[in-house]
Structure formats: structure tokens, C-alpha cells
Image 1 (cartoon, rainbow, N blue to C red):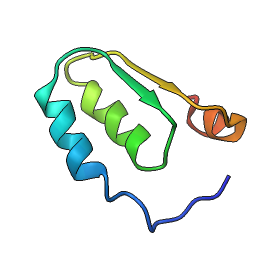
Image 2: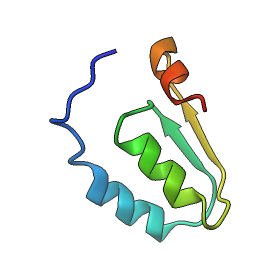
Image 3: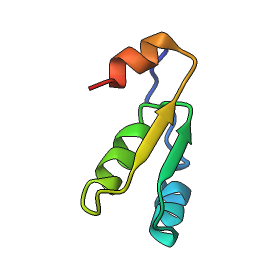
Length: 64
């Protein structure tokens, strides 16, 4: 697993999209920025978040 702080520029767009919708969220590709953001964005309204990835190391890292 490669982790870099060079990424995350998609968060403003992701934030806007999350705020424009109200249903469950499907995340295709777990990431260091998007996954924690989506998790905490969904908590207050108990919105369902399902994250998928084909990398077992990313899945293990974020499982809990």
C-alpha cells in the first residue's frame, strides 16, 4: 500500500456531492482521504456507506 499526502484534491467536489444527496453511498476504491471523510460525513444522519476495494491491504487498514 502506497500512502502519499500529495492527494486529496477531490475532497471539495466529494463534499459538495455528499451534501447534495441523501441516500446511501457506495465508495468504489478505499482511500486515505475519501474513506474517513465519507465515514464521518455519514455518521450524523446514519447514512449507509459501503466501501469496496480490490486491495486487501486497504481493506484491512480501514476495516474497523
